[in-house]
Image (cartoon, rainbow, N blue to C red; front, side):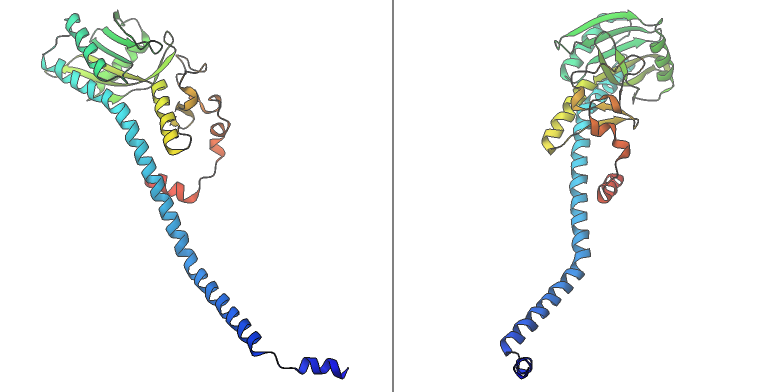
Length: 273
């Protein structure tokens, strides 16, 4: 018994005392530093991630603008030429040459059309399978869709993006920019340039490869305008429903996007953008 009591009465070596004391002090100091720095570091990381997201979104937006912007520029340029009197809508041959030359300069345009106030139209359409352009003339006054669109474009004050439409012959959905034609304040016709969603889907696929992810473009929140799976078209498209619903693209993640919970800093970045 006395031997055991003597053991407990022995002094602790100074080296052990110093080692334990210094270790505790270092642990406490590091812990306090981490405690103080963690909120700051977390904010810095969140800001950095937001900047990356914003820069990526800006790059994507610029790519889409560069793809679609030329179609609008063509419509506005041709509109000004026709309105100035340089081209007369009754001269079908000159209007045809004008459309062919304009489409050749902007390859992403899938179709160009100029129509007079009676919906007598000259159309240039590119076949997505061959890439060749086909030029024709048509009287669209008996087509209910074109009649409705003509009523809409009469009220417009400048070029604007219209609703997507599906061409059953080409099996392609077009997004289109339209512009009324006026001379001396009087409506004389309209001009339309269209870009296929197939081409827009190719752009989304290329951007996805660039950023190492999946890029898609929604239309109305519940439909998909562009997606890598839509490059070759889709059986769900029709004249009545030209844009594919979320759950029919073939992407299981996209089909449940309404159930997703946004990451906080990403939601903030997207809202800010």
